[in-house]
Length: 178
Image (cartoon, rainbow, N blue to C red; front, side):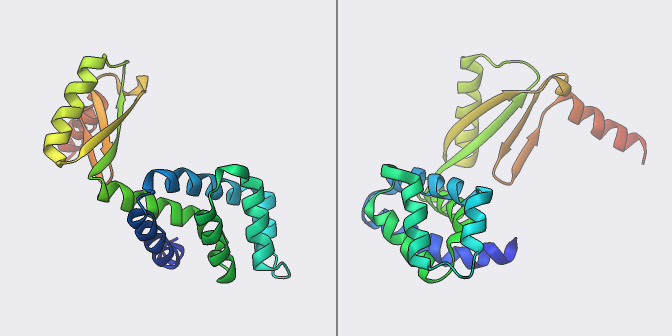
């Protein structure tokens, strides 16, 4: 996986820089996500892996499957990927592009998992506190998991804050076993 990310990085960076400079970051990400989703389809994967297929034809086929949702700039990007036999890297390119975009916009997606549904005011307070701590704009996504018993589990990129009852019980059990 690291090798694919290494190969995808220059393409993601070039796409990000182009989108940033042309002030079209908001349009590029959903288009890339669509193209990446289509490229993950097993039938499309088989076509993209076929060494006898021409790159330009594959790029056109992929763009046609995506339909009118792809703009001319992204279609051109697909052609460049096809010329370099890198269409299979679209999922990795999309992940890297999204990371560059979030870093540029100083935002971070935060997943909050709780045992019960959180009230809107509690979610807002949590987002405000995280925004101050991380010095970024916070996009909160909440879900529930009754296995937590109580409390919350927060994931923001590499940062994990386990304030769940289950997490605390596990820490207590580990401390008692020492």
